[in-house]
Length: 451
Ligand SMILES: NC(=O)c1ccc[n+]([C@@H]2O[C@H](COP(=O)([O-])OP(=O)(O)OC[C@H]3O[C@@H](n4cnc5c(N)ncnc54)[C@H](O)[C@@H]3O)[C@@H](O)[C@H]2O)c1
Ligand SMILES: [Fe+2]
Image (cartoon, rainbow, N blue to C red; front, side, top):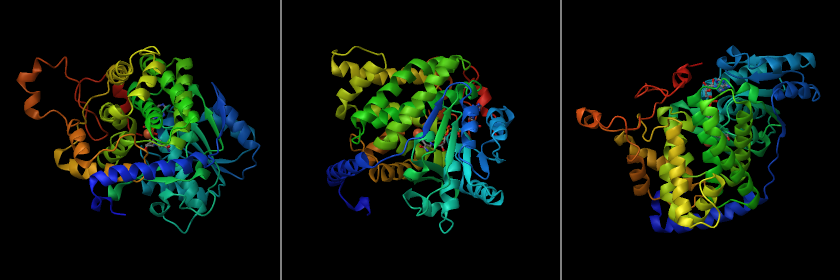
């Protein structure tokens, strides 16, 4: 259906009704949950438990950084001790693109594997899920598998060891991969892609650089907030989302400052998983719809894109969800139950902005160009309005205006006249394409290392 042919006002009303209907369906759709192994050393326990499933050979899908840091070792030692043969595919790069997934698929077939173990962030976990879907459905290309339940055959089992606390992919129905030719992201959605067992092992997260810790943590926060504010929220997803929000506000600043804080790392891993459980049922919203365009177009890391967009979308949605924002404020420790709702909602918006500031997250996106705004807005709204149960309808003009607020300062603004304000100005976003706009925050330089 071409949404552009329908007047904006009709779309606003019609889509609301349509999304509420779709929400009823998802509410009753059973989503499997992985067995969770939690705590220091749990990746070794996962290796031991995989032996019990009697696989012929498993393919470990990971990236070179994870291998170099020795993060595979507890798992591979346990697999070897349990007599499970394995091969390693360690070529994953952030936002794994289609040709890379195809190489992983070739390795899976050549090595005659019958299961996958993803060790890494969302990029490795989603690549493993995509390989699993593609290997079971050889008649379909990855592009053809994108969408809801496009593969007829059941994917090979996936086990997951997240090494970032962000995407929640270890519990979700989704695999997000990049389509470099179309400068976009593809999402394969199937309940059979949910991993069988996931290990949340904080030992593997202590070396995560501060900037990646910050961005991925804000991805988890965005999942929880969007799931809580959307129209598909249920009592169960609310509980998961609220718990995640509380844990993230308390623990993300701690792990950003001190990556070796094992207890806080474990709480962030749990929060990310809870947020993943919430949004796999209640879905996401405009923040993700816009962030996906930044990822596809400018290669902005997913969590960073979400973090930059989140405050703007919250301010836009606020009039429709004041009470809900007030509940988030209480859970985030920013106020007390019973206080004025509007004041609490404001405090939550300010709290998210303050959290971003404390994590060195910029307020604008350096790579964003005025000329790209119309097509980015159109693509974001197409994504949101064909799948996300957003709390307040956004028109194209409103989306474009929102994006304009994320434009980097104009060159003339950065000259002598603004130098005096340098201490107050927050930096523009770094993307994988653009260098830092200021001296990096503590430890931020480390995440520039490419795998
Ligand atoms: N499937 C889902 O439900 C879902 C949800 C949200 C996002 N995503 C997708 O996940 C991807 C992003 O995943 P991500 O944010 O976890 O980042 P990522 O997987 O791209 O990893 C980012 C960087 O962190 C490094 N890294 C990971 N763990 C490390 C560790 N423990 N120590 C040191 N370095 C480490 C990696 O090598 C990589 O360079 C995006 O493609 C996004 O679209 C998927
Ligand atoms: Fe996300």
